[in-house]
Each structure stands twice: as C-alpha cells, then as structure tokens.
Image 1 (cartoon, rainbow, N blue to C red):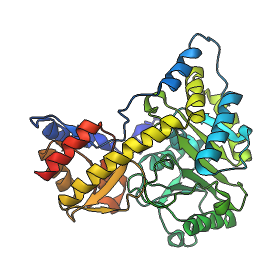
Image 2: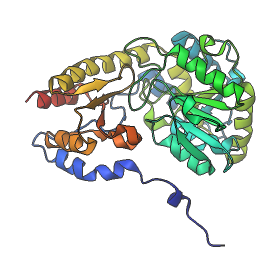
Image 3: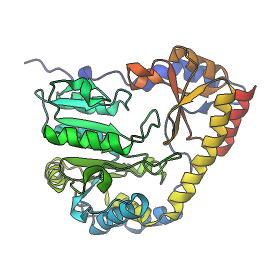
Image 4: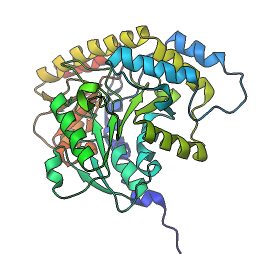
Length: 367
C-alpha cells in the first residue's frame, strides 16, 4: 500500500503566509515591531535559571510522571494562584510544552475516525491539528446546541481565549461540563492564559464552582511559557481527572514522552515562586494599556480582550487588508482568519514585545 504522508492531512502552517507582510514591515526605517506571535521577550527569572543549572550534571533518565517536588509545586501553585483545590499530586503530569500535549491528546486518549472533537469557533490551530492527527472528525461550535444529535467524544475549551481574550463565565462552563457528562464526553480546558486576566474573573474548569467538586472527565492544560517566560524551555502540565491522567501517563511512558530533568527542576522553582510571575503580569498590564489606547485612537474596535496576551481588533475590513495597513507602519500582526472563518475581519495583536518596541508601535499608530 502506498504511504500517504501525515502532513498532507494537515492545514498549511499559517504563519508561513505572513512572509510578504513581514518583509514589508521589516522595510520600515526604524525596523519591524513583530506583534504577530506570543513569544516572550523578557528574561527568565534567576531563581528559575539557578534551578535549571542545579541538576544539569545528572545523567540518568527523568521519569515521565515528573518528580514529586514538581507535582507538589504544581498543586500548590494552582491553589495559591487560582483557588483550585482537590488536586492530588499523582494527578499532575508534566508536558513537553502544552502545544505538544494538546496536539497529541486526542490520539493519546484513543480517539479515531468514529469520534467527534468539538473546538471553539475561533481557536488556536493546534486543536484542529490534534483531532486530525487522531483521524477524528471536527466541528467548530461555541454553543453546544449547534451540535444537535451529534455525540462528541472530546470538547476543547479555551478560556481565556487565544486569539480573542474572551473569558467564559461560570454559567457557560457549568453548561459545558453538564452537557459533556450527560454524553460521556471528555472536556479539555486550555488554561494557558488563566494567570493573565485583566477584567473580571477567569475560572478554571477544575474550580469547584464549575464542577461541584467532581473532576470526572475533566482535564486542564497549564503552561509556564507566558507568565514565567519559559517558552524556550517547553514547560507545561496537564491535571484533572485521576483516571484520565493515569491513562495518559501509561501511554506517554511507552512513547518516551519525558520532560528533561533540568526543565522539571526549573518548572518546580517557577511554580513555587509567585514574585516573578506577578512582576511579569504587571509588565504585560502596562504594555496592554499603552497599546490598547493607541489601537483605539487609530480607529479600531477592540472586541473581548479582557484577558490574555492579545488584542482582538477590527475596523470592519478583510483581515489581510488590516495586516497590510499595519505592515506599512512597520508592525506585523496576525490575520484573524488563522483562527477560523469567524476571524475574517479581525487581527490579533500581541503584547509580547519589549517596552521600547510597544512604545514604538504606539507612536507609529499615532502618526
């Protein structure tokens, strides 16, 4: 039988299509301000780097489940930072970055062609990729009533949202959990931006107010890339339903999906220290205030964006026209169509640039 490359089943990598706009922005006399990606630019805190170095000489294999210290630190951080209680350390599983975890979750959970995966109507592309890698069917739906008689196997939830920064309220999350339990579906909540909420309150799917103290069928994915600047470390974890985490652990042990020990040590330090996270949050808060005012003064409407690292902006035109408008001013932003058909008139503008470059972008928007 002739082999069909897996890549053929996947969509084109969207950021490859930005090369023209990137070249135009880079031609600006004062250089490009790249606000198209969520890549941290600020330094890694010393306490994290020291923890990384402290175990660099150890030659043995790390455990897939992670060290006890790492799992304890994750449980403590969830309780202190988000009020999430009732998580056992055994139900924490480190990941080689949360993109990896999300991309492989449907496959690791045994989903296939008979299964339906629900993703948000505006969504980070990896949810779709994960379903495609498992050979599952996909539907975009924010309101579960749209599914009709369809029986979903897995529902991806993302609050705060990438790209929109929208926060799902308590009632919405409770309805998702109830709907899923009636149909024996798994809910996977991508909570990478939970620590970057600017307006109102963002709740975890693991919050007792959402699930009534029952974690059955629920998984939450957490990242250290954003609030701890650890994107290059590929550091994240999944937690929730003990049975599902145990299942993931067994499969990942067979597949060799292990987080390197120095990274585990760095994660432990990051999760145990709130000072560096608070400092980074305030950096983003200041950048958001500067950029939000400039975007609005330039005539854009900013929708949602009450949390996260992005502004979801529009002026009612095709998103690629807006991308070109920004590129002419030396600013690169991401077209909303990257995230689904409903994003066709929006752009996503990142806060992940230095203070100097954010100020430069705001100045260009004023002229």
